[in-house]
Image 1 (tube, rainbow, N blue to C red):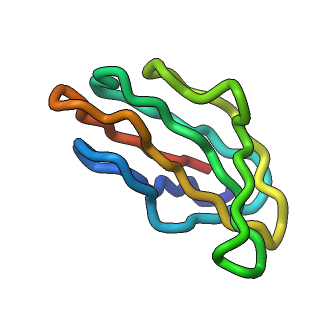
Image 2 (cartoon, one colour):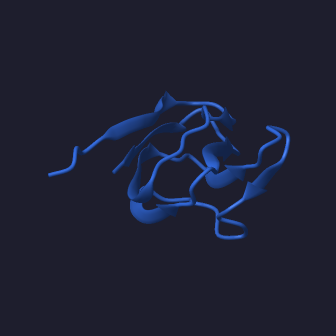
Length: 97
C-alpha cells in the first residue's frame, strides 16, 4: 500500500502571484476551491532555468473551482499563477497523490 500525500499550494490567496514550485511522480489530483472574483489560474511548468516557464493550461485558464487529474512529468516543476484577482478573490488549492 502506497502513502497518500497532499500538498497545500494556496491558502486563502487573495492577490495575483505565483505559488512555490511543486513536483510529483505520476498521476495526481489538483483541486482548486474558493471565490475567483474574476481571477484566473494558470498551471505552469518551470524549466531547468527558473526564468523559463511555460503555461500548461494555455488559453484554457482555470476560472472556476473544480478538480482535475494531472500527470507529473519526471524532473519538471510546476506552479500555479493567479492573475486578475479582485477584492473578492480568495482561493485555496491542493495537489494530492
